[in-house]
Image 1 (tube, one colour):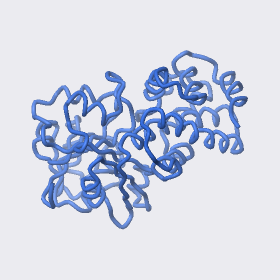
Image 2: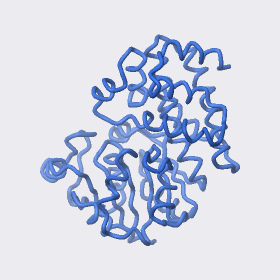
Image 3: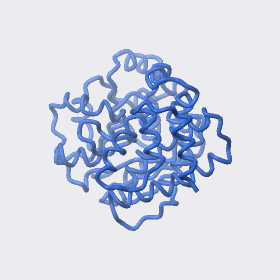
Length: 331
């Protein structure tokens, strides 16, 4: 890895678009793979993604656009995956190009359903990518604010700190500040769990709970997150750092949070299917709730908020009754 190392972004959604924008601030050219031929052609001629963050205008000379994932993988030394976790396996099945020697960074905030693993662990166990070649990109950072060039913060995690620093440098700009950590497992689990807690915050809002309860919910959520992550991966970490607490707060409170939006609809009485149909974007917390709940059967951490969200989304229990019981378990 050196100054000439090339990047590829895998994905066509809002977060992939934001990452492409950040990289273009520093790179002469990046590869960008998306499934939609229409989106690629639109970008080539109109200079913006027609479906997500359409206000972002790209310098097309800086984009190597392709609808072939193998072309993007062959092009790049560092590959950033930014697609919903539920679709990752299907995309990886298209690969004929080897990932050997590639540096993989996940910007996916979810658990791979087929393996019940976080993305980094999935690449390590299923594709034999060495842990030192795997990294994670987390917030607190919403794609919509990147598009508006509002000051935002990233945390770049990798077991090899030099790789984390390289990616952080190439994603930094006047409106992006990026720091590094070696807690790749903890930050990735935090990015998964905060989406579940954001759904809980949305459900609470939809049910009519106010700011006072929301503050108690978020306070309990960060402690619950700490317990869960400690069981999964014991190491010294400050759960109050922005990669954990900061990302939780912005996802739980922001009007840009799709998971909070999804939860709000559930709280207002939508069925899971109708809420999913009305949203144009994937709420990762829906898939994460099942994976985290099942995983915790093994670890046994005390997680009343995750349990409540799981019961509502997957067992069809009444949100009002579940949250009434939840209020008795929070402090």
